[in-house]
Image (cartoon, rainbow, N blue to C red; front, top):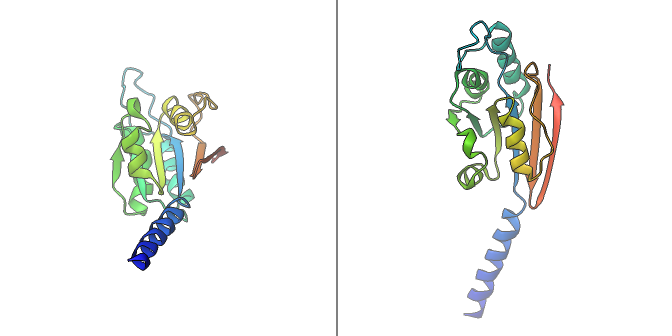
Length: 165
């Protein structure tokens, strides 16, 4: 009985130690350049430059082992996420920008490497929510090149911005 108890405690301790080594990495980007020909269109598609940038994002993520791709439910974000998701054989999952980084999202992305495509105001807000501080401001409306990288390992959270032109 003592051997069984020792084995049980050892197994639980080993499992706890291994699970605490898990790292979650988020790559967050704003959608690529949108069609601005109709200022009243609240759900425009990407323009030619945006379609090219979406392909460039796919190339950027080529050697990164993404396990999930998230997008808001807008044409421009979905079109930005599509080349990368297709190249990884992943289905794009929708998220509600009003419920960013809630307990369900955290649980579904824990210990994974994830791409999140959003907007000029939601992407920095999402990063701020993940890191638990107001570090990043809204993205300028002409900036589609910011890549935010957030890494969570145990209780340690790091973030940075990389410009990808």
